[in-house]
Every structure is written in structure tokens, then in C-alpha cells.
Image 1 (tube, rainbow, N blue to C red):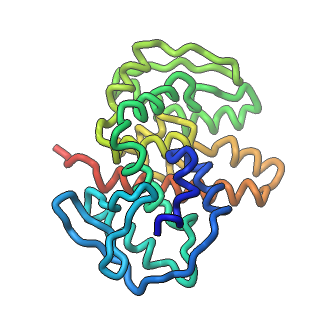
Image 2 (cartoon, rainbow, N blue to C red):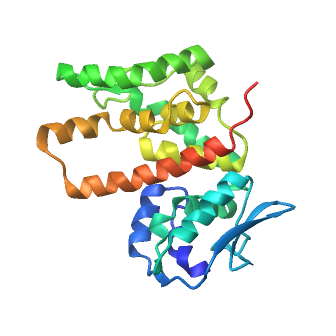
Length: 261
């Protein structure tokens, strides 16, 4: 099982874009097991194939912290028909990355997410046409207002791509909301990488926006361009793969969300 995901893990394990490219190039192995399931252990829920434990590319047991995640990952393995296609298994790939690359690097991964606050997608607006300006405001302003109201994080807007320096207080305030456990910080990193916005990822984690709202907000400009010039098949396929990774990240965040007080 190790070689199935080895090529993917060998490159930037938390970059879903690279992961998708590696998935497409990785050789596919025939399904060799009858059943995929999980078993509860002292460390969590271990994924099994024919009652044998699955291991990550770096040989650790594939153990997840919640029954909900274990069921979803086992379902990914069960859904494989003739061959095993890692590209259709985003939760398994994310779990491999957490166990192999994030557990001992939580602070560094959180810092990488926090860098996006300094140049977040939501802060860079189109100057024209008016319809696009309005659409960006419709999708992006509520998230910025939410961040300001919830964390006291007041970000500055800019037109075009000219960099604007964000207030240190805003970045620091948003940074305090990042999780400290490896699973949620890894999922947040994936959501940030896919959308280009740590603010959208944070809104997803906090339940201020659902995954469809986040996806729509992240693709305002892409959707606008498609409406003006038509869809590009390659871009559409790439976006579909990114949405798959975003939904996997959202599943992890939902499964591990702290109980509501």
C-alpha cells in the first residue's frame, strides 16, 4: 500500500495542487483487498484492509482521531473498483500528510497559513467593471466584516495587485484564531491553499461560511471570466480537483469541531 501514495507524499505534502498533479501521474495498482473498514484503538481509529492496518507512505499506521473520519476514509477505499486511484481519495491523502508531515510541525504549518493574512485574496479588489466589483463585494465583504466583528481583525482593501501592508494588529488578531492541533491546522492549510484566502478558510472552520459559500467566494473572478469568455476544459477539471480537496478539508474541520457551548 505504501507505494500507492509515495509519489504524492514525496512533494509538498500539504499542497493540494501538487498532490493532484502527482495523483494523475502515479501508477495505479489493482484493488487487492475485499473489504475496507476501521477498528478502534488506544490511539484513535485505525483504517484496515481485510483486517490488516493501512500504513502511510512513511510507514506509520493510518489512524485518525474520530469515528466520522474513519468511516469516510474507509469509504474512499471501499469505493475503489478495479484499480486504486489516489486522486479520488482526498481524505486518505490528507490523513497521510497529517501523520507524516504535520504532527511534529504544527506551529510551522500554522505560520504558513498566517502568511496569507498579509496578502489575502479578499483584500485585493477589481477596479472595474462595476458588475465584477459588486460581485466581489457581495461574496467577500461579509467575511471581512465577520473577521472584524469576531476577532477585531480589521484588514485594508486595495485595488488590483499592488501589495498593501496589512496592520500588524489585524494579522496578529486573526492568527490567534488558528488551531493548535495537527488535524485541523492541516485541513485549514489545505483550505487556504485551495482558495487563496486564510480568511475564507477560517470562516469555514468557524462555521461562518459553509463549503459551497467558500468555494463560490474563492472563484468569483474565475466564474466571471468563464461567463465572459466561456469555460476552459482544463481549468474546469483543475477546479473540480481543488473542490474535492476543499470538501475533504471541510470534512476534517467538521468532524473535529469543538462542541458548541
